[in-house]
Structure formats: C-alpha cells, structure tokens
Length: 177
View 1 (tube, rainbow, N blue to C red):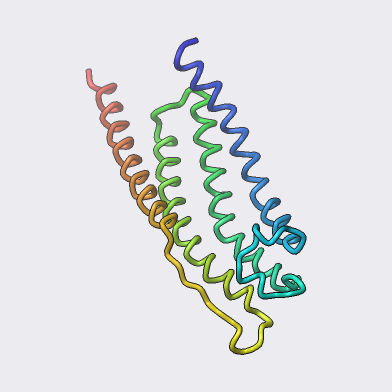
View 2: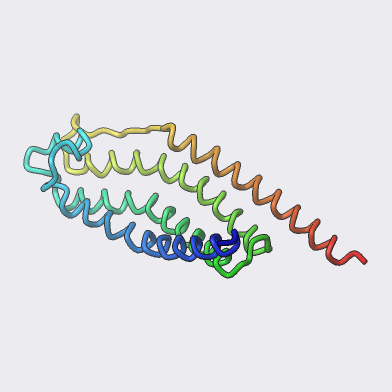
C-alpha cells in the first residue's frame, strides 16, 4: 500500500472520529452533570462533597454551562480537525486551506488554555451558589495543562506560518519557467 493511499484512508477515518467527537462532547458533558449525584464520590470534585444531599439541580446546570466553555472550544477544534482530515482524505496536503486549518488549530489551543483557566473559576463559583456566607469559595488555577496548551498553540501557529511560507515558495517555483 502506498503512502498516499494510507494517508487518505486514515484521514477519512479520523474525519469521522472528529465528527463523532464533535457531537459526543456536549452529550457527555450533559450526562455527567445530570447524573453527577449518582456517581461514586471518587468521580466528584471534593468541593461537591460538601453538599450532603448531592449537588442541587441549579448548581449542576451552572456547572454544565461552565463546562461548555472549554467543551465549546473542543467542539470547534474537532470541526477544524474534521475539515483538515477531509482535505487529506481528498489528497490535498499542502494547500492554503490546510495552512488555514493549522492556523485555526493553533488558535484553538490558545483558546483552550483561556477556557480551561476560566472553567476552574466558574465551576468553583457554580458549586458555591446557594451556600451560606462563609462556605462559598472561588478557585483560581493555572494548571500545567493550560501551559501545555499555550505552548502547543504557539507551536501550531509557527508551523502554520512555516507551511504557508513553503506553500508560497512551491507556488512560485511552479510558476517559474
């Protein structure tokens, strides 16, 4: 099997998986927050355990909304990946559209870092709603995952710029007689 055939075949599969992940992301987020109180305590944030009767529906709804911030960024990323793998499946490897996808993926990773940072704070606020004064809390956290996303996003942007430069050089070479 030649390399291009492998690229096309695997890219078609990854395009399908990206589409499935796009739709599965909000579904699994919703299922998690709807059925949170049924899960074992090991799967819960320790601050949720301060609610002896389980986290009320209002709080779970607010937590779902907070979770949809990074989930929305992930969904956008899956749609960009689906487009990129669609281009690869069609045999389009170094076009302006590919470069655009890499640029969008880089930006998605940067957005992911910001969304992750905000998510932690919003979740802590959502869990505290309804608690008496003195039991509310706000968590602000910059985790290694956000730092890794910032680095990976910056790297993907640079790669998109390099690919665009290479594409431009190749177009110029092809037009030279």
